[in-house]
Image (cartoon, rainbow, N blue to C red; front, side, top):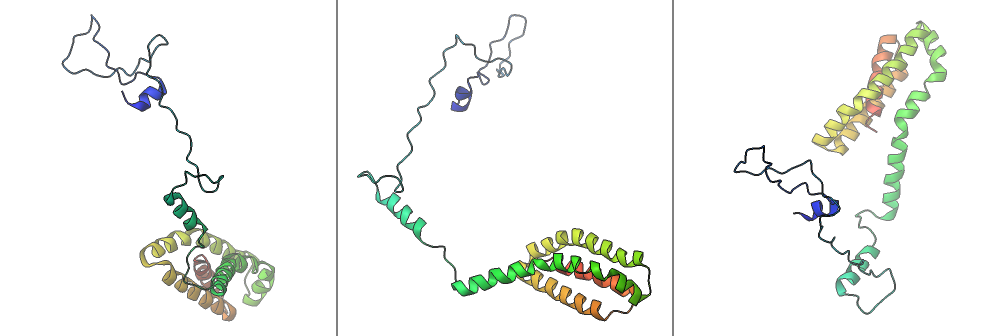
Amino acid sequence: MTPIATSLGTSVLKSRPPTPHEPSSSSSTPDLTTTSTPDEKQPPLPQQQPPKETALSSPSSTQTPTTTAAVEKEEEPPFSTFPPLQKNLISLSASLAALFSTLSSFIYYPALTRISLDLNVSLALVQLTITSYLVVAGVAPAFMGDMADRGGRRPVYVLMFVLMVGANLGIAVVNGWTGLLVLRMVQSAGSSGS
């Protein structure tokens, strides 16, 4: 019997003898319906060993060189090829890039009325650009993630950043509603990479 079955207190793996009304077969099958009864003697559970002392607890003379080396390794700072200033600049630029999608979505709302007047379209059509932006923002990360898995994060991130900047420049000079609709979707796809 395995220690797992013993520790669970069941006799699942025991084979039961055939009963008088059952024909005996050459192969014994385990009886999965019986459990051990209190009068059956179970082997004792294995004893748990006390936890080993680490260097963080009180020092003792039983400390081995391997535990000392492990503690020294824990105290070393994580390795990086970048100096601290460059690591901070990378973190700052990545944090600012994460704002692109949210910022380009919400900054558009106060200008809806002015955009509808400038393009001579109804407010409902301009609001459709918001819907298309949100739909593409929901779907595009699935494709961008797959592209990043296949080709690496950096090329995909650069491609999405270029798409977003190009879409922003196009939106600034667009004169028609269809161009605005398409460019808002491209902007959403580009900003979803961040």
